[in-house]
Image 1 (cartoon, rainbow, N blue to C red):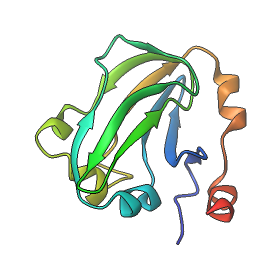
Image 2 (image 1 turned 45 degrees about the vertical axis):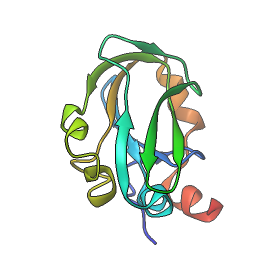
Image 3 (image 1 turned 180 degrees about the vertical axis):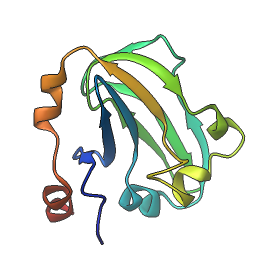
Image 4 (image 1 turned 180 degrees about the horizontal axis):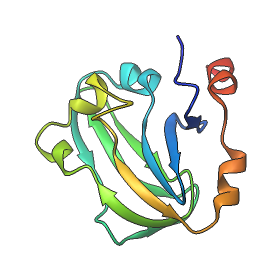
Length: 124
């Protein structure tokens, strides 16, 4: 399976799209497939701060509940409120409309620890 090369990845199966000092975060298609039918996404509100590696929410499927981990430290500047009504979007379009949060990074060096698409695919 190929993963978008313009994105960065975590070992916890989140993807990161960098846009200046802000990143958009979602889960990978691999994670979405493993979870199955997604029925709920629990996200913090905009304005909350997160530290790299900390849990920022959960994603619930008919099979399990999984933690979501912050790939970088910073302030959450946007959440995908559409997921409240249509959480299945995360599984149907994980790299597009299924994004979860946007974080304004406090330390761009956090990106250095993330994986390339090739490195992520090799770990699966």
